[in-house]
Every structure is written in structure tokens, then in C-alpha cells.
Length: 265
Image (cartoon, rainbow, N blue to C red; front, top):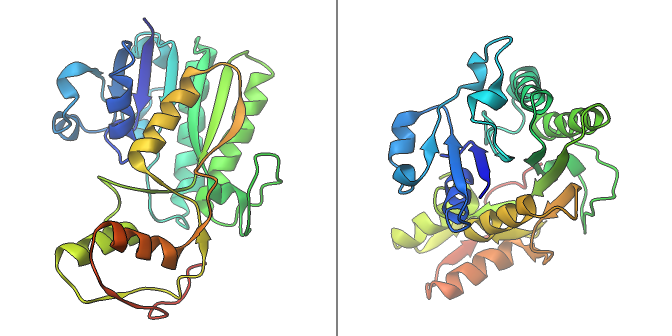
């Protein structure tokens, strides 16, 4: 039996990752900033919960020992989302994340999985492969890539396994209410006749959150592939087709007001 630590456990992805880990037979340690929010999770009584605010790290403290010397860390914690352009990612998150992860590694952590983002690739279209040069264009993508570079550099000093999981577009329970899938669900629930959206021709790679959580657990648990791993479907779909497929599966008819909103960056 392994001890698996999950940070960001009460977030959109974390809550689902914990649910999948509970089926592995391992001891699960969950962490986030809020005990109150954690108590609302259906898995709270089945894990060991240790709260930690990365903004309150103590100099000189051994956080590997603090979390009971975990065999594996699945690091999902990251604040400031979904504002991908905010300077908080580079100015605050990056140094805090770097200090926290380096602390655990230097004190004995040997197996680390961290979630990155497709925004690390930058403003590109078409198939994105792990071997492509990254050109992040927003603060979030730049900060995530910088953290990956730092960790890869640290591996040259301290041996540990690193799996860097680049996430693409995710939908499902607990998602940001301002996201397109959440707005579409809301329109369906309200019985609206028209759904306002962009032109809908941008191409995306979507996965449901339950499958993403399953993939993250599987990636973290294996030892054959390290480094950057794209966590995606590999199946391109336009936003318009994604919406039409969703409506068809929901057996609902809503008129799409294409072009009402401008395309995002």
C-alpha cells in the first residue's frame, strides 16, 4: 500500500481525482486550504485531510515530513483561475509552487505528478505533440512552463520521477459556471430557446472530468513514461459541433446564435 498525497483536493479536478484514488486500495492524504470546503466532499471521512495554504509556507520546515512522507504526490493546487492573464500566476504562484515542490523533493519525495496546461504550447492550431516547442502567450501558461523547467533542472541534482500532465479542455461537475459547457447546461435547465455563442469554428480537444481524473491517476501510477504527457482525447471538434452534439445527447433543441460573441484570444 502506498501513501498518495493530493494537493488542491477540493478543486474541480482534485475532488474527482480523490474519488478515483479511493478505488486503488492506497492510503490517501488530501490537502487544500479550507477544511470547511473539504468537509463538504463525499470522500472526506475516507481520507486523511491535512490543510495547507501555500501562501503561508514556513521557512526551514520539512513539508515531506509534514505530510507523513508520501510515496507519490499528485500536485493539482493552483490559485487565480480561470483568469489566465493575471500576473498572480508569475508573481505569486510560481515562486510559491517552486518553493513548496522543491522542499518536498529535497527532503525525500521520489515520485511527482504535476498538472500543466495546453496553454504552454501558445497560440497554435492543429495537433499539439509533447515534442513541440512551447511558446506560452499568457501568464498562466508561462508560469506553468517555468515550473516544469525548474523541476526538470532539479532532477539533475536530485533523482525523482516527474510526470508533467498537460491538460486540455475539461467539462463536468464542479466546473467554472462561466465556462461554455456550464452555460450550455444552464440554458438547457432554464428551457431557453436561443443560445448565444461565438462563431463556433475554433477547434478544441474536450474530455469529461471523470475521464480526466481517471487518466491523471493512471499517469501518476505508472513508471514507464516520464516528462510531458498530453492528457487529451486526440479527437478535434469545433465548438459549434461540440454544442450541437451536447444538445443532441440531451434531446433538446435550442437555436444557436452564432457570432454573437467575438472569438477569444
